[in-house]
Length: 257
Length: 167
Image 1: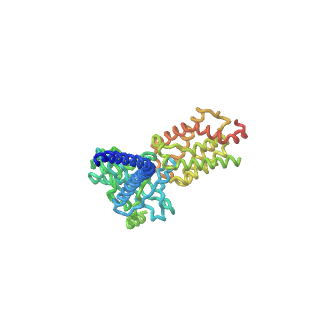
Image 2: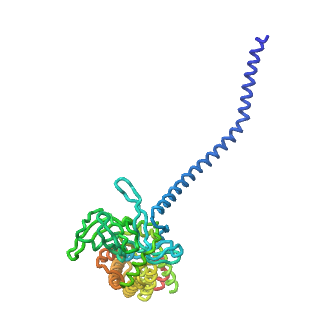
Image 3: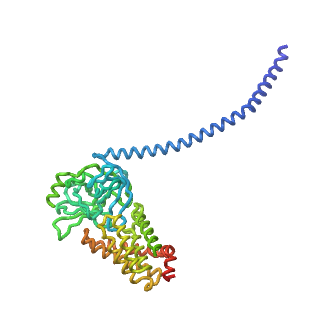
């Protein structure tokens, strides 16, 4: 008897199971659809979060780099942005968005970081921009290295021979180091650094590289034309080094005057 | 005439802001950038006579001095002088066409450069090499920019020029 019923039971069971699964399929379709929508909206949220995350990561990297730059300086420094450049071709001063209120004083050195190609490797070089020549409440004026009026004591990095650096001409992006003894061997590509002797710039800051040396018949010295590391046409961000000028030296200069 | 003064003052101020913005350095050619304020001074002198030319040159030059690192008057005196001289010639002598405007700006910028060079020997560190490095390239650049700017100024000062009888 059971042998007769069993196929029916099996058939019914199968039919029931199939029907209930089919019914469950229909009834769950709505739930699945709503779950799908929910999942899609979650996916969108995650996708936008991913974009946001990559932006935050970039910002974090940039801030870390800036922090690193600041830590690389021996002295305390004030980051600033160039807000104006001299409107005339006869002068090359820069104006930054930090002033007396931020602790900036006249004769403080200004540096910036420039990407330099060293063989196949790109590296960040801290190089001199110029010095502060005028300070107001929230702005300051920088006299750059390329201004003919500036005078900075420098050394040739390789052989330590000293010289006096100033801007080459009014509109060029070059500098010239004068009063270098004729005995000094100057080569193309030699690095020029600050000597620190005038009491304004700390010693050892990079200025640029030699592009040409000239022996003048009328002078007992030789001079070197220097290409600064800083590209003044593209300069945007600078750091003002909180280093007061050497007071004793300045008093001495005043006495001599 | 008061309208001319107001419009000129506004254009000078806008030009000064453009000229001193860091991004303006990107358009340097041969190390120099154009002197927009000077082009305005020449235009005013050329269109409205010596008096207006020298006043615009003096006031524009003083603004220029204030924004620059120059001693006061260093950039104002050359502009004042050229504004006066151009005003003496003006539209009544020189017809307004492209070659004339180019030549006018080239010669005017040369003259301005020579006066500035002379002053630089007195006030700062004069360099004869500035003739090659600053004066001549700037003259070419200003001359090149002058025709479109003069065309623009003609549109702006249309009413005033009509009153003066030049249109």
